Every structure is written in C-alpha cells, then in structure tokens.
Picture (cartoon, rainbow, N blue to C red):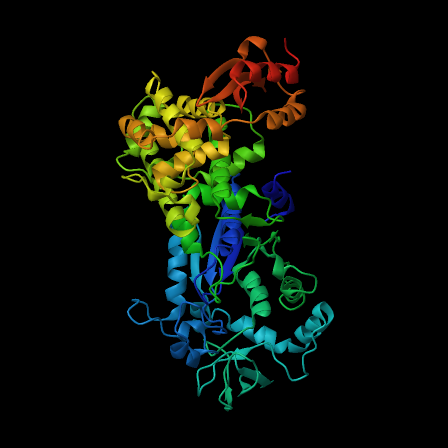
Length: 599
C-alpha cells in the first residue's frame, strides 16, 4: 500500500482535516527540515485531490528561547541574547528584518513558494500575545500535577512537586529559557530567573510575580505541542524519528493531549532522518546542507521526488557526488518518460510523480544531467541549440524552462559540490603535462586522428566506438588510452565521456590537437610489443578466452628486429597483439605458431 493511502486509512471522520507542522527558527534550516514540510504538503495535496476538506498550516515557533548561536552569526554579538525568545532577538544588522526569528523563517517560507508548498503560515508570538493560548496556559497550570505524573510515567523524568509547565519572560532581563515557575495562585505565577538552570544561558536571579497570559509566558515544547493540536484542531501531524522514540516527546504530547486537553492526538507520520553523506544535520550548529542551498541546487520536481519517492520510515541518504546526482535525475526522468509515453507504471509511482511534478503538466523532453555538466564546461556551445539538434525539433516553452533549471543545477553542482577531478576546462594550447605521455599513447592519438578524420558520421557514439577500436588495434589498454585523450585536451587524467567531449569540440581543433605530438616509431613498436616469453605467458592465460585465425598473422622486419602481429577475437571484438624478438620475422612467426599450435 502506498504510504499516503496508509495515512488515509487511519483518518477519523471529520468535517475538516487540519495538517500541522512547525519549525523553531534558530538558524538557517537544514535540508532535513524540508522532509517534514514536503511529506505534509503531499498529504495535503493527496487529500485535497480525493475531495477532503483540508488545510495545511505551518508555524514559526518564534517564542522558543535562543539556545544556541547559529554558525552564521557572530558569537561576540549574540551571546548576550541566549535564553531570550527568538522573536525578541535582533536580526543581523543590515538584513532588513526586525528580529532573528523573521530573519531565518522568512527565507524558509520563500523556499515553500519555490517548491509549490501550499501551507498557511502562522507565528506563535502572535498567538501568545493575542491571548489565543490563555485558556491552554490556565489549563496546564491547573493540571501541573497531572503533567508531572505524565512525564514520570511516560519518560521516567521526575519533576519537583513545585514544577509548573510554563516558561515566563523575565521582567528584568527578558530571558525565557532561564526562568522557573514555582507557584500559581490561579491568576499569577511566581517565578525565579535562575543563573544555573541551563548550561547555554545565564539567568539574572530576579524573583517576580506576573500574569502568565497575553505573551508573558509560553508552554514548554511538549506541552505546547499538545495545546496546538487541541486549539488548532489538528488531525494530522508527523514528526521526525528523534521525536518518535519510546517515551519521547511525541509520547508525552499524546498523553497530555488525552489526559489534560481531552483531545485525541492527530494521526502520526513518523519519518526518518535526511542524511547528507551519512550524517544527520543541525540548523543552529550550521552543519550539513541548508534548505536554501538544496532549493537553489535541485529543480523543484527533483527535490520533491527525492523526498517523496522514499517511504517516510526509510532514511534518505543524499550524496552530492556526480554518480548520485546523475542517478537521481535519471530516475525521475525515466519515470517522467514512462508516464508521458503511456507506459505501465505502478499507481504509487504515478502518485509520486504527480506530487513531484507540480509546475509542468504537459509532456517535455530533457537532456541527461551528465551531458549538461559536460556541455557547460566547454566553450562555444549553445546548449539550447544542441538540445534542438538532439531532439530534432525546436524546444517548447516548457522544455526551455526545464533545460534552464537543469543548467542552473549543473552550474551549482560544479561550483559547490563537484570535486576537482570532475571539473575541467578545454586547454587552448597543448598542456605541458602532455610531454609525459608514452610513445604508445602518442601513437594512439595519431592513429585516432586518422580514423576520426575519415568518419562520415562524426557524433558522440561513433567517436566513442572509434576510440575503443583504435585502442584495441594500437594496442593500448582503455584506461591508458582515455588518459591520453584527457591529457591533451584537458590537462588532466580524467574527464567526461570521451566521445561526448570530442563531439562538442570543433573537429579541426580535435584533429590538430591529436596530431600535435609526433611519436618515435621504433620506440612505439618496442613499447607496444611482447617478447616471446611474455607472449607465451599471455597465451597460457588467455587461450581458452580468445580465437585466432592462422591467416590473421602478419610478419615483418623493422629496425633490425622481427615483428609478428596477430588478430584475436575476444568477446566478439577483434584485438591486435604485437610480438617482437631478435630473430628475423619468419623465424619469429614459426615460434609464435608453435606456441599457439597453428601450422
């Protein structure tokens, strides 16, 4: 069963369903934060399509205390604000925002728009200050003993008898993370701003008495979570793995919701971590890829697909390697192609595609991501014209937009994630590194030039097959042959698919560069030949894997040495093998025939 249908089967009968999610704006949100956002958005869109009356609300928990300094902020400035509500912490100078909470959450909400997330936004500061949660605050204070018992039974955490589930904003220092309420008389709470309540902030020692209503206080997270469910009427809300452990915050909130507020907790959607290179991320600590970075990198349909294709209960382990990224794009593109071509697909795959591809609803053609990363690194290439050449017709408006987003993604990957070995630049002059090539490599390049010059159909596929053919008949192993090509064109040992690379470089330039180094034929023949003993060892190792025809043997004398060349077939491909020795060619030929047992 598709995971969204599993949720559908658990829904209670309600006139309206409310999906809730929230984020504490303590730093630049990491990409893992988007998993919950997109899972909830998928639920919203799926239910809406099924005809349900449904809303998706997303909150900024901006009344939470600042308990860490984000890695993007100067510690010497922000250390004094630790413990204060995020909504009361000033934004970085010149940012255009009044407070830190808005500074961080505003860009997160812009990402929602980029990804097509249809959530109604709310800010907890508003709900506390306008009195919306006054009744909830009074309820939890009146039921402090019940909540203390819940903490003990559910999580084993013992709270003192004078502990109350409320955090007051200190009237003297303005901190909320350092206060502890010690009494409640039904109208006001007595509190202490403790110097040593937490390790990350220091209270001022003030003792005061104040009404906990209208923004003077907030409920702690687990209690507040249950209050949101009750007073917002939430029927669906998932949470990450860390909240769903036995005795964890979800279990505590569930118990408070039932026993204190008399409200059945919403349908849960537990979801696993989003990992980057196997590591969980933290936004306030500035670790891992940020949501902004990922939204700038991946096109919306690809990022949504990444989050929604994997079942929520399974980890998403993202790797910014070329192999992983290319595989991700290809997986989506193949699903797209199957659907627009009317090929059979599973119902759940169709649903994932529909929930991922929310901006483009008409068929379109795409270029392979790895091809785009190759083309943008080569000069004089108009990728749009190359796409039209490959497709055989002009691009539609949608195809241009999709291609533009893919080009942007490829550039972002190259600038931010690609290792140096995946970056390259066409060298306008022969690189000095080319002087290190062997005579066999140089001979291979010259032979390749002759073959390519004779090609009538000069394209990526014919060039690639010609490279392999020339390598087999030089002979030179494939790895060494490709290193030679990358060296003379890019000045390094590796690069993109060689056939693709040469196809997008002017043919005259290619031929000239391949012939720019001349080779010493005597050294080439010596370096590319086996002596008789080496040949015999080769034959013993390969005789059951190859076929040799007697008429394929060729003998000749050159540079006072005899040479024998033979053609063998391996895996249906012809290969040349060269043998040399001090004997003249005819004597050498007879010895070769004896070894392979051919008359």
